[in-house]
Image (cartoon, one colour):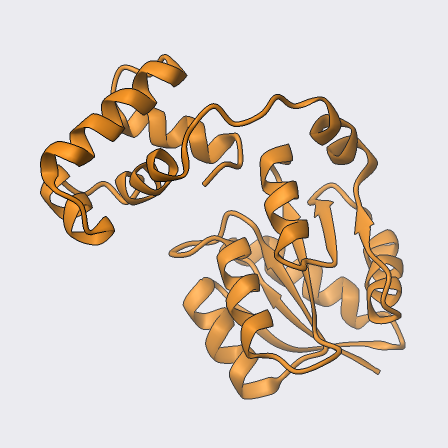
Length: 202
């Protein structure tokens, strides 16, 4: 029996996914979660074989949660990311973080069940359309520091709060934000942060 944790902030999707996966004779959903914090708590409590995580889940996205779970888990644990918005940049980050499968939410339940079995056997799966997009996507034009500052800006804090989080002077933060905005053609730091997130760079 493959023990699963299913985490998605949309209750209807989470419930449907759980019900469909539980119909499979060799799959058992042992825990559900509605956000990243709940997912981590459920993971620590139930120690599933595979965590099926929504990428867009608050407060930390599914990739961040997957990285934290993998850091704590023992041998044999795997993570699968499901998403409505397949961003190639995220795919590269997910594979680098050791995520075993990256699938769109349009995937049929039967196919998802097959993917989970393959993942349990040590295989990886990437949706073909996402893989094709990743191969043709251009490189990120932003520096690591610009990405770090934009990731902090995405939380909606002030420049002072961003500076405190990334341990830089406020003037330096403003410079990084201005540079990132210019490179992305964004009018505000929030627009730049959104663009970087949508591209999968942060």
